[in-house]
Each structure stands twice: as C-alpha cells, then as structure tokens.
Image (cartoon, rainbow, N blue to C red):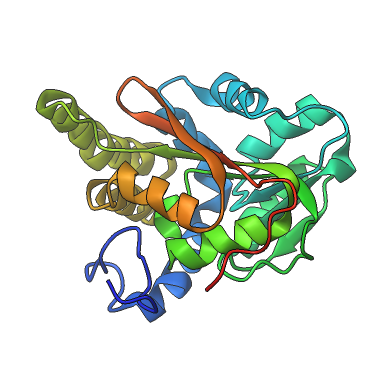
Length: 256
C-alpha cells in the first residue's frame, strides 16, 4: 500500500454508495433517518451485552472520576451513558458524531457537550481528553491511519484509546450463524417492529461491513503506527473485540 493511500476498513460497497468519497454522505444520511429507532435495534444487535459490557471495557482501560472522555461516533450515547455513570460529571464526557439525527437523540437523553464533526478531522484541541472511545463505528471510518492519528492527537500524554467492535468469528459455523442473525433475521425484525425500510437497509449494511472488514491484525498495526503504545485487543465469544492503546507520556504527534 502506498503511504498516501487511505487504509479503508473495508472495500467500497457499490450496493450502497459508488465510491469512497460518497461514503460519509451515505452513512450520515442513513444514521439520520434511523436515529430514533437505533436503541431498539441495538438491543437485538448486542446479544444482551448492552451496558455492562461497555462499562466493563471502560473500567478496564482505567476510566475513573476526574478524567475526561471524548466519545467519537457517539450515536445515541450507549458508550457515553456508561462513561457518565463512571465519571459522574456531565461536563467530563464529550460526544462527537457526523449525524445530526444521532446527536438530537443524545441531546434528548444526556446533558453532555456535543459536537458534530468527522472522525478523520476531529474539531477539538490537541491533548484535550484522557480517553478516546468509539463504539462499533470503526467500519464507518474513511481512513484508519488518519483517524487513529487524530485520536492520538486528541489525547493527553498517558491517555487511553478504546475501540469496541464486532468481527467475523473464526469458526465457520459461528460465522454462518452470525451472518444469518445479523444479515437476515435482525433486518427483518427491525422492519417488522418499526415499519422502517431504512432500518432494514442499515442492518444489511451493518452486516456487509462486518463481513468485509479488514482483519484485527491490520487494525492493531494501524493503531501502533499512529503512535500508540501498550496496544492490544480483548476478545469475548470470538465475536466482541475491544481494541486498546495508550499515548505515551511525553509522546510527540505521529508523523503523516
């Protein structure tokens, strides 16, 4: 791969958008139209993991009262809610999302600072937070290298990175079951329970991005290349992955 070539989390998916340049517009529009039903569909997606899984992952990377969190791709605030429960300070959890619809849902539920913007161009100051978190949105990034460098820039020295994701199981039977559940059953249930076709499209897209996502090793390498140390991945059920890393004390910004 050329140094200036974007590291996409998955190839262009022409069933949804024609090229990489159109991906942000497609993703923003899809999430805007489905925001009010997202929590409902997430209950089907999470296999019951829900809040306790997110809370445990945040605690594992050291989140505690007194620290500041930038929750990127906040969605309806599922990670932010757990961060707020841990820190106890609404001003210590800042949410960012490309979707105005998602931000409207968070604003209705949580009294925290919110920013509309791109993950690849965070509209925040250098060294502004102690933890950058992102829940199940890695597959919507345009360029992993650029985005991870932005996460590194936003962190204070010693700060932590936490990225939650779902990945294809290695075992073929588990993979087939997941494909049926996420690729067929959840889209159908989402449509039947809400009557919204866009929600069905969202879930088909969700599965297609999982199925075509780059392997975990590529993600870990990109996190390291962005300047993070102590990089690793916590795996549960051969399905849920929590990628983590830490910005070293006195670290300089990673080079382009």
